[in-house]
Image (cartoon, rainbow, N blue to C red; front, side):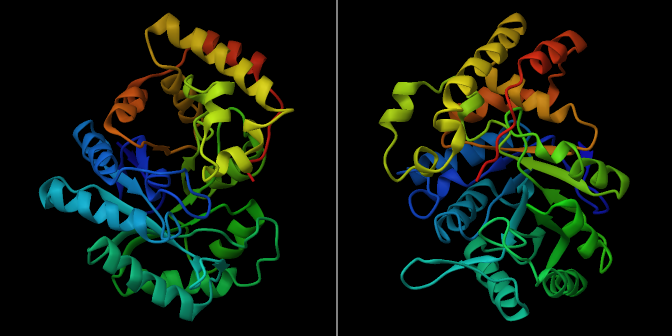
Amino acid sequence: MKHLGNSDLEISPIGLGTWAIGGEGVFGWGPQDDSKSIAAIRRSVERGINWLDTAPIYGMGHSEKVVARALDEIGSASRPFVFTKCGLTWDDTKNVIHNITEASIRQEIEDSLQRLQIDVIDLYQIHWPAFPPGADAPDIEEAWSILADLMEKGKVRAIGVSNFDAAQLERAHKIAPIASLQPPYSALMRQIEDEVLPYCLDNNIGTIVYSPLHNGMLTGTMTRKRIEDMPESDWRKQVNPAFKEPHLTKSLQFTEVLRGVADRYGRSTSEVAIAWTLRHPAVTGAIVGARDAGQVDGFVDAMEFRLGDDDLAEIEAALPASITLL
């Protein structure tokens, strides 16, 4: 277990991400069977994962509801920590709206508590400082003050942010301590190494990275044919640069390097890709998504796997140019 920043949470090196189990919708992953989602959550807890990461926007509330059903089946004695977020809402026509004003956040947390069927959220995070990414972010101070108030009132145990750069972290840090940052990070997507991870390390901010498998690209199961056959409702096919040229060929070639390392140890390619992110001293944990129990079994042992210096050198030599997720 690893201590998450300045919080009182001790978390496993891997947490289960529930983006894909939201199913179809904006930034959806295509059709998803809820019973398989619940089985994935239960298997992750059985295998030692003690935290789930979700968000209201995943399936527009559906992911949180599925998490609630799984928690009910698991029972209170084994219940994992629940991490969720605020800041992305939607209207009656399913248009996504970024809103981190006080009124929105206070309504969002009540909605999330109701969907999750819990009394306290273990980690509550600002999902994006602005959206689309790169837009002005004038409301950070207001939003962070509200999250600090929610923690003081006992609505949440710890507060964090997601997708913040170093300058935005500093703006929030001046108001109240930050327990955690959730940034994208994989061997294909390394932008946070220059400024963000050093800032977190210097300021006792836990880092729980998302997309360590780069949305499935680094699992070793992705092929050109599989990508071509993805449903049109799968956002990766439409938006993710790694799934398109000029990046696709290099992404697939790099995955073969990871597969070679994995084969030497009798491990999965996913385990190697996740272990590569966990090697960084600033990384507290990695969020890995699963759509069924079998996928959990394919990566969970990365919690105990460590790459050797020769492995890291081989991977480093093969790294393609870093790309952005969105």
